[in-house]
Length: 319
Ligand SMILES: [Zn+2]
Image 1 (tube, rainbow, N blue to C red):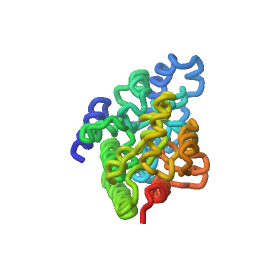
Image 2: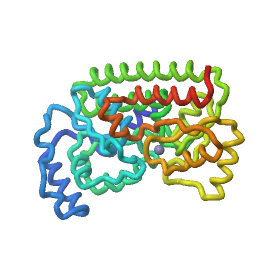
Image 3: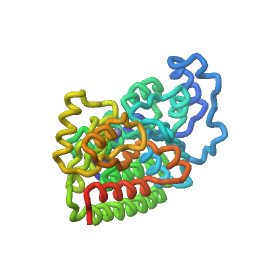
Image 4: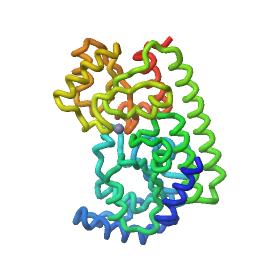
């Protein structure tokens, strides 16, 4: 936790603690966006209708949006750049996204390569007052892994929530008490979720599960499971035909009766392998962005994590 707080302050020191200064920000946005689009400055003051009493927080994937909303409550407007149905690993910011970031009081991103476009975006905005928090660095230093999917382990997610609480408190110190109280409530929910995973994954027949891309390494490590992934750390990192054939043989030898697939962005490989070894397919959602259905039905991080637990319990033949 201490490392997270240091990281928050380090990033805020690096980029400065900002205050809403929309006029200057509009100018900066135009300068920055000139490289992206000739029409970039045609529609300035996009956020003119916003309530300036609220902090504008921009996030880069669904769990960070959810956590920021939980912690910020009524005191923040959170806008997630990667909307429902968009593959987060493939995302590139539009000129509108750049404009939004230029107006943000706080930009929260995961880091560790999850948003490879972010350094270029920050550089393009060239705003010394832009407050940016990269949540992954402090977690990565401790976990000794290059896997950016921290939010899929409830206890690492808990640290992301606490870091967001510290970042919001630094951005609006007068509301620090409320942010910290909200963060504590969200952390308590994650503790309950962790307990459910501990109990639910106890005494299972199998410990190996097969996923689409390698998003569940932190979750597997937390609950002493083994993840076998069809693709690499991103959905695009697909195996060669020879490697796929070997992988299929390896998966067959594990004795799994299910192959987990995602609700979007699968390239059909999990389904192909499942058909080849004659096992069924189950959904395990990496939560990088919601599906349009999940969004319209108001499903949250906690709901989908519990659905993931149900799928894992089936796949691992838990009692
Ligand atoms: Zn991923």
